[in-house]
Image 1 (cartoon, rainbow, N blue to C red):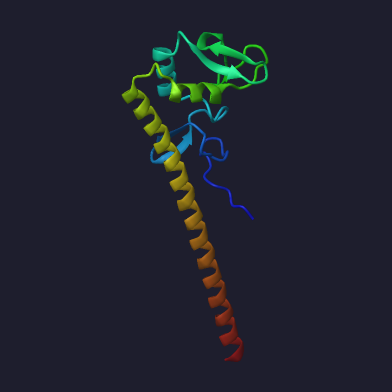
Image 2: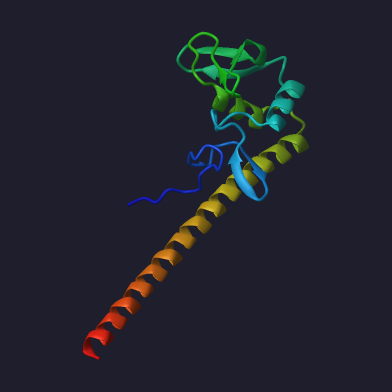
Amino acid sequence: MEQPGRTCPQCSQAISLGDTLVSAGGRLSHWSCRHPRALSADERVLLFSYCLNHLVAQCQACARRFHLSQLAADLDGGLRCSQCRRDLTDSVRAHLYGCAMLPAEVRRRAVAARAAARDLVKRSQQLHDNADVLMREAEVALDERRKALRGSLSHG
């Protein structure tokens, strides 16, 4: 049976590798619980600074490409196709991390920050899994000791 990974302390939804996260008090949580994959504030700054004048997203359903100003923005951080309302956040993010208009150093740092966040989620899930294994081992050991105690009481 698959064990659940880390959950967001604010919304109790699972935290996945593609989610946009913040860390407060040493705890990971979603940037936006209603839209866990929403662009972060840093990603939005980069888009508005470097990508306003060119195409940043493509809707596969409509076969249309969009400038940032043509996308419909949700209050919870999502970016949607203005025609069919499909979520284009991942398309915008893919553009951002590959955009030739970003200075190389800025792009490198943005990619590194995103990778660090993913690594943090992976490590957090590994620690959670390791803690779960240790807890199960402790439960088995406790159960064995209780059985041994009951066995010695019944023979004594």
